Length: 614
Image 1 (cartoon, rainbow, N blue to C red):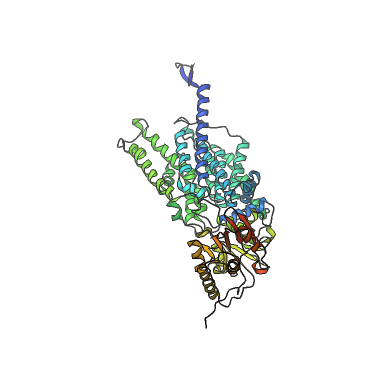
Image 2 (image 1 turned 60 degrees about the horizontal axis):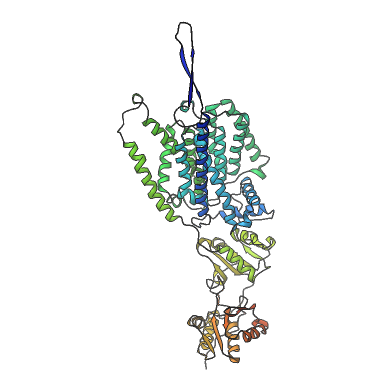
């Protein structure tokens, strides 16, 4: 900084020097470049970590599939009845649909859930930058802004929560943008550190801030609790502008909850999501620091408005029926910012002139800040990242179920829930043939359901499933519906398959490896294959390489319906291509390992029956 002084003479007084500060253009440019580098680094840190965990399956949210389905339907201008109407804020769905349409996310992503999660990553990255900008706007130094943003970007709790589809991630982004636009640093802090001076606020900026706050409430009504902080920050700067912004926000809310309620009225998500303790174990250190910071922030003028709103939001955790996930999504970006403000106040008090501060034990605060807190966060994050693992490799269970249905039940009506509806629709299945569990009329031909919907459905019995994909909460069961097939003695038929298979293994005209011999002996082979192999072996010796399983069918208890025959490719192809009626295969394909014969699922009952020797 270069300084220039002038002397002003008053009658009877000596000249009094007054300093006027001129900013060095080179230093100002360096400061801006440093700020830009910090922002870009925060962007890379927050976005990169969340991309790594984009497909993580733990923890999972039951309501995520509903939000994704509604966003897909809105973005593709198709009808979707859904299994529930709760948690469908129209403005939030419009934002998600707008992102997926403009970015073609459903065309690029491996699953529809991953496509909508991309919008969460974008919102999180913007939120991280807004935390930095709001810290600077409130008058906090750069290091405090970096601390707040890094806590949000790196915390396993933040990563685990912010990669899933929760509309409150969008709402808190709008709320922080509104707070940034209406905030200004305190006059008393203008000269107390490394920060920019008070910015000039025009009417357009305040109106834009009001629009952002209104967008936050329309996305999630829980962000109404951010309005006290916004009003407090406005009253600090200009009471007249505070009244104007309040009028604009109230006018918008009156329209949204009144004449335009059918199109704009927001709704809350339903409960039943992972409870609060399951989330907090991802980052106990951030949880403890956040709780202390919200209380200590009440005594720090810089962040007192944010601490008040943060405590109001935290109080929602005690309200029955409100999902903890939504409340945490609003608190996560706020508490690191309050913690950074408290840390700055402590550091500033420690460096005050000796005559202005009370005596303190030297080095105690430094030891806590430099040693204890980093060690606590290191241990917490080591535990959190061990718990938070990326999703498993390979296709998602719903995608595998879609592949199975496309191969075996193309053109059929399928009973679906929220998760499988979106996956099948994104894979090209006509939405007119997808029937939700809320409106299964007329009855569909097949069902593709996750465990919650399967447990609630009275038309599907899991032991009769055709295929099962995945495990746990993400499992998808495919079953054939319609009139039940009367099987007089199902166990007896399996026993007959085992007896016939064992007889084939003892035949000298059938050569097979131990693995295929075990399949025959257990009775896990389709009766059509048993009959045709016996007939083919009566004509010439047969070498069986394998009975390849169809993905998902072993888990459902279905018999193997494929065989790979080697050593007699021409004869095997002619034999199976010439079969008719129930013994006609679905496909006969020559491969590098031999001839692969595949039968359709569900052999007619009674092809093999058990008998008792006289």
